[in-house]
Length: 76
Image (cartoon, rainbow, N blue to C red; front, side, top):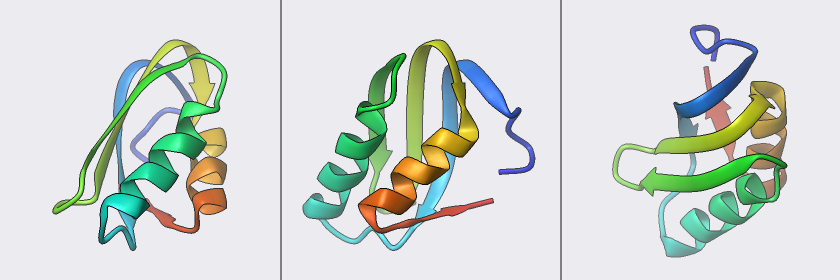
């Protein structure tokens, strides 16, 4: 997470540990999707990579909190 600016606009990719199935994808997508300004969330399950596209600045701490709320861990 240290290489990602504190807030970002556009598409930023994060690595998330613990996702193993479609339910995991749905949980993470749902929680991140609740953040104001998030347009899309796409997840590559085999690699654990989560791409978040925003229309306005979104704080990476908010993304980390959403991932935590879903029950997973942001690697950073």
